[in-house]
Figure 1 (cartoon, rainbow, N blue to C red):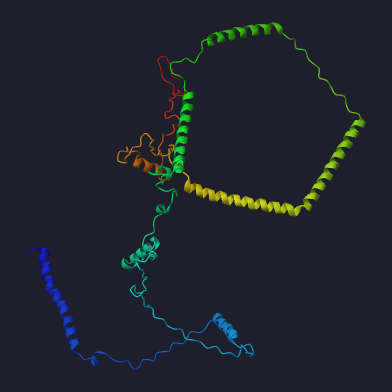
Figure 2: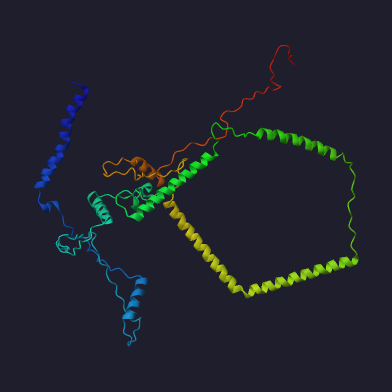
Length: 403
């Protein structure tokens, strides 16, 4: 027999010997009467009665105020003579009884199905349905729902995911709606044609030289005329001698002239001072008007700021943001001409692409970025290698002398 098996074999009688005393003791206790097992303690002190809780100063003041109000106006009541009794606090049980309303007992709204003026009761909205689901989740599963992440609560745009087609694009539209729809398509086509013509106009024509028939002759003629003009200018303008021209000097002012200039200056300064004082008096008299104008400007400025903030929020929810390097191109809705229309809807050719439309809608609503070419940087990727031969570490060649 193995070593481990012997240990297990010896453990069984050892455990039996240890537990046999407890088993015999339990049998002996079960046969004893209650008088021998339990003892009544007659020496214990009686339990103290719970004293009622005393009112605080704030509670006493509130009670005094209430009693003063309730007292009769005719009788003169002395507030010091009034006795205040302390009331015991009511001990409420921790367990509260939960009552639930029976749905069958509720008065059900009955209505006649075959009545002409049938008013069906309002159905539960999505919010009520969600509230019922949350209540069920809390009661049955006994745990709270996790909060939704911020990414799911973020609204990138309020533009509808699927655009409703215009009235003129229906199978049987009215004349006015169809004409408006057709005019819009024509205007878009004219814009595209105009842009194409502008591009083609700037492009050079194929197999046509830009130089005209008489252009070479005109160039040669202009060169000859230029040479003749240069020769004539050399003959007319000989070498001029440098003559020092004397600058005209102004005569000095007399004492009388200086006094007159000073007097005029003093008069001009006095005039300026008087005009400034008049202006200040006028501003002081119109102080109320200026204050009114300032307040009006401040109100207008605040209104502009509020309108700008509102417009900014509206633009962020309605306009497209620049996501990615590419340029957004709107989805071109398929349009059938009158020649392409057939008598039966089954014979109409299929137009448009649902995947492309969904993709463009996601780009328009700022959910998907628009891919584009990456801008090429002008920075050099490789560095130039420069070899420098220092004087201290010069290459040893044939004929060099070691110092």
